[in-house]
Image 1 (cartoon, one colour):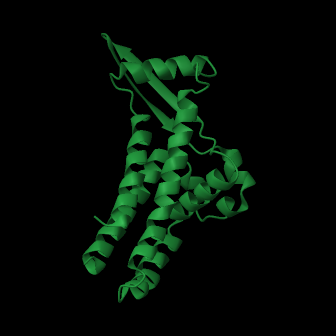
Image 2 (cartoon, helix red, strand yellow; image 1 turned 30 degrees about the vertical axis):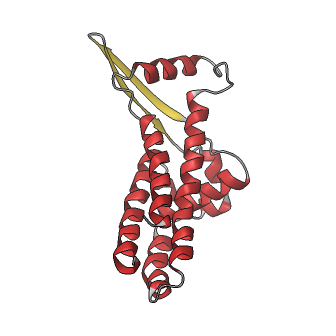
Amino acid sequence: MSYTWERFQEAEFFLRRIAEFQTIENNENLITRVLTDLLSESDENGENIFSLFRYYLSAFLSAYRSVTWVMKHEFADVEGFDTWYNKEVRPRLVADSKQKLLVELRNTSLKEALIATPSETNVKTAESQISGSVKWFIETDVIKSNNKIAKIPNINEIVEVDIATICQQCMNEMREIVFDCGERFSK
């Protein structure tokens, strides 16, 4: 197993944790937690579901962002890697507004503060079944206060989508890159 693949799996782990906060279908623990945390500030540990989501998002962003750094380190001495990375991978990532957003969110999360993520909660009950969803978005103040984020092409349309969906879309693209790298350069 390559170091790049391990780092990708780390990012995937945190993305799965983020996804768990999205759907509350018949998950009594999560439903109770969402409803309780909507009404109160935090639990006995000073945490609530909203802070936990932000912690997982921060961990995901750090792991995700480091996939290509690990890849560049791991394959730096392999013939053809630098050319492939600089001609195919880097331009692809740089041109993608969602990828740019994740880089800037990671920089903000790492160097300034956790990303504010207001949520939209929808809970339904029917015949002892509880279902619903929680969608997490990027706080508009984060966008307005960060010039690099504000300048990302189509940023207003991008942030209308919940952050978990954006992260999943970027992970799908990164998976293709990691697989391509493995096929071309793994020994």
